[in-house]
Image (tube, rainbow, N blue to C red; front, top):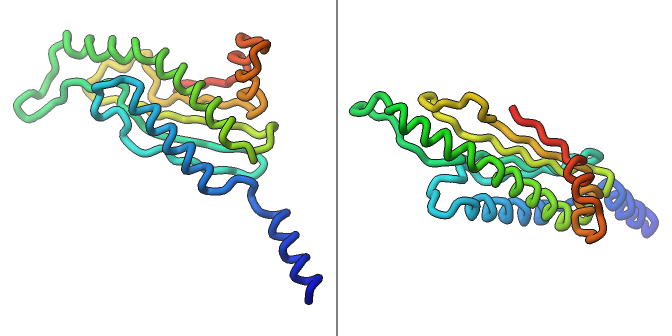
Length: 176
């Protein structure tokens, strides 16, 4: 009976996912706070809480949805936006994209630090979907940005002597 108990405990330890829900939740909360702090004064920037999942053998995936910039809306009394307002909203979003991309990279690095149980060969992924209204000029603007890299690559940003340009190049970024 004693050996059976030991074998059950060992089997559970071997087949348990190395990442617990508490770690993922901590990263989710951290990412929410960082997104909310990106552009002070923007009340409705974060449209949904960040959700994370660990996939054994693959890594961690985090996803959220944001409104990159608040803008004027349509109503029954205002069914069209003047071109100047449409252009101003588009300009604001285009100007904010580099800030968002930098923040996403920083969030991935922070997540890689916290998610210590994740093997260094597995990936960290952050996907942010961007809200666009039908009346907006979205030409050239992405609706989703996905960044991913191996955890070991992200941890390389912490090393002072590392080649930052090479590390930046190792982060795969896709915009849809």
